[in-house]
Amino acid sequence: MVIQKTLLIDNDKIKKIKTAINKRKYAHADEISLLWQHALKSSSVFSWGKVMLISIISGLVITITTYL
Image 1 (cartoon, rainbow, N blue to C red):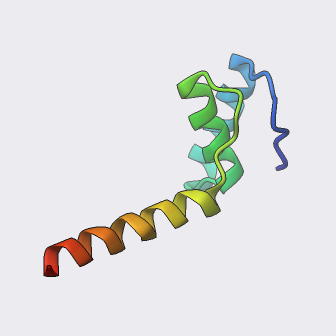
Image 2 (tube, rainbow, N blue to C red):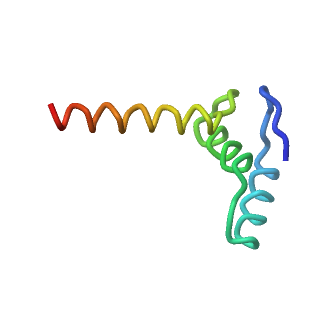
């Protein structure tokens, strides 16, 4: 599933995605991003690479400050 950067999301599409996730018992990263986009009422799509980079940097900062 490919999501464009500025995608208007309708409620029917969200319901279909939630139903598909419930049937499969897992969600693809694009689907999670679309649901977050809908929940936050945002037009931007989160990049999971950026989320992981931020979490790694945050973890390193916390680890370093703990040992200082």
